[in-house]
Amino acid sequence: MFLPKYPDSPTPPPAHTHAPTDPSPIRRSLPSVAIDKNTVAVVLVGGVVLTALLAAVAVTAISVAVAAVVLRSMLRDRNRS
Image (cartoon, rainbow, N blue to C red):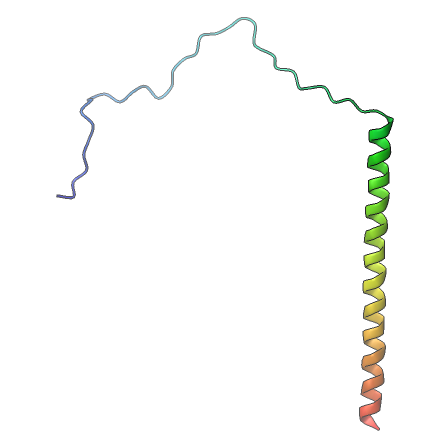
């Protein structure tokens, strides 16, 4: 009832078929990309903007951490007295 069904062919197909050898292989070239001054300028401006944003986030995180430590110490001193 639950036995597998085997194919009728007694020999399996070959695992590897040999492709004919071509003396001149086909070379596919990549599409050429034009890099001009505008592209370089856009990439540089984008890098500068992203670096500035990352620096702003880092400075904000550090200032929030310092403010949290100061407030925590002030509240701890208030609760002790």
